[in-house]
Amino acid sequence: MCTSLGSRALPLVSNQQPRAESSAVRGRRKQLEDGKTRGHAARPGAIRALGMQRRASAVERDREHARVMASRSRNENSASLRAKRMNKELLQVPDRILNLAMAALAQANTHAVFQDPGNEHWLAMSVLNTAHAGELFLKAIIANEHPLLIFKDIFSLDDNKADELSIQSLLTRGRTHDFEKLPQVLWATTGIRIPNPNCYERLRKARNAIQHFCLPDDDDLRKLSLEYIYTIIDPLIAQRFGLYAIDYHDDHNVGYDYVVACLLRWEFRFSVPDNFSVTEIDIAEETVEATAAYRSWLQDELRRIGKAALLDGRRK
Image (tube, rainbow, N blue to C red; front, side, top):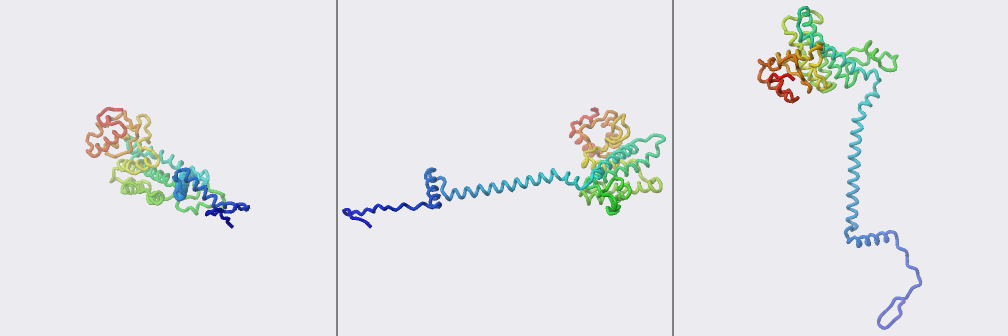
């Protein structure tokens, strides 16, 4: 009801209490007040868009962090996970094979390089020791993937009695892959193709002839042995183990000087260590008759390690 006061109508004062604002109304009013305070810089629509953008960025960061952590976890734990699947004796297999391989390589280098009266049998021994070293190095590479991969039939290793495999049971019951099949096993387990397969086959046949029959007389066996060592063994062990074939020999008085001299004369390329040094030979003299291609390769290798002066006849 209104009462008249001239031409204006005023509302009657009511004794009723005003209704309380709902939470939605209060929130809306506060949002509008905040917008006024900030000069409308943070309008409701902009706030929602900014919030969604921040949430999306946070989600993406979380996903990326999860990917990084998962990758790091796989890399850090791969070795330990593999160790958990094998007992301690199996974990020793690759290193035990590698130690024997290095010893065989030392004899192979020595028998292929040095020739003395009374040591004529070293000719045959160079082939046998080279094949032995090659077989063991290939098995060491394969065993690094898993020790049991070098065996033909893993089912035969189980005697149905032992709780776990041991080195003794492997020696007693295990049969490793034949020398002839190792290139295929290497490729299947590591993806590595054997370098110089033609040389591998020629040395395999010479090794079989010497091992089971007699010494072949139609090949330069010393050269064949060195070709096998430095075109097959040397690049593989440099890549997989950081080893250099020239370091392994039995003439400890003069280092690898005469091994290197022999390689230079036959123009075999070899892995050159950063600390390469010779004192008993003159590289310039040893390569006088070398082809331009071989001298170019050698020059590049010596420059790489800062020893280019060696090719000029200066020993360091």
